[in-house]
Length: 310
Ligand code: NDP
Image (tube, rainbow, N blue to C red; front, side, top):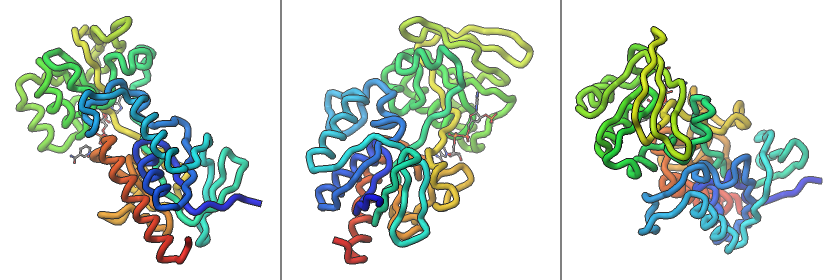
């Protein structure tokens, strides 16, 4: 026999925990499955200085512990486990946890987030959080007045390069082809920012440094090497939404972001709501994700009330 819950939340980043806080306080008795990376992407960053309410800043892991504790305080049932398949055929939604446990739910909030893509260098992993970052808006401030590099050539990289250029003395933008993928307008902004140097046809061979970043070894398409002296290395080569398990059930765009009805968290399946980075490829901030989690819980609460489920 399977367990039945009123509100199932999948994912434990800012969005999942905020949904849990609201759902628990509304007596929806939420059950949350934490997924592969409990606490989400913030647990792989260091300081967080831009989340309102922490005037002295905080640490990503500590902040997510606070989110979790607040969700627990109102009785959220927080569990280890990964949703490995779903069946949204009927009015009651079915999910399988860790390929063995079946749970049915009246409402589901999908808050599975996204994962940054990485270049794949050993040095990139080793220095992650110690000079290597996948979020310029989160971490750029720590490199004020310093020289940094950013890899990528899409809209995110272009936007983040111009953001960094306001803080940093010099920004090297490393582009693997002879042109950028970013929109013409964004390219124009990059090329008209005097302290951004775009380095085309070039890839990163190694990020240099022991306990922190002190350089990057680049190689161009002619095999010529060049070393940059930098203290921060930003990767902006795209994100992958963690939505694979919902393919075929929830409407998504071509890159796997879940489509929601604008201004709501509603998906194409009644009773299934999507929040946070799993449905947002533009803002991707902890605070926007948390706000979206709140929307998910309120939408789910109204859905349950309309169905007369108490
Ligand atoms: P994109 O997939 O658009 O771009 C990724 C970039 O990273 C590409 O230029 C790609 O190079 C490069 N890249 C990929 N892998 C590597 C690698 N291993 N080494 C070096 N470079 C690599 O991702 P974005 O995050 O930029 O954008 C995602 C979506 O969000 C897009 O649709 C974008 O338009 C949208 N967006 C919109 C914004 C806005 O409207 N304000 C802001 C930010 C994003 P290559 O070109 O050679 O493939």
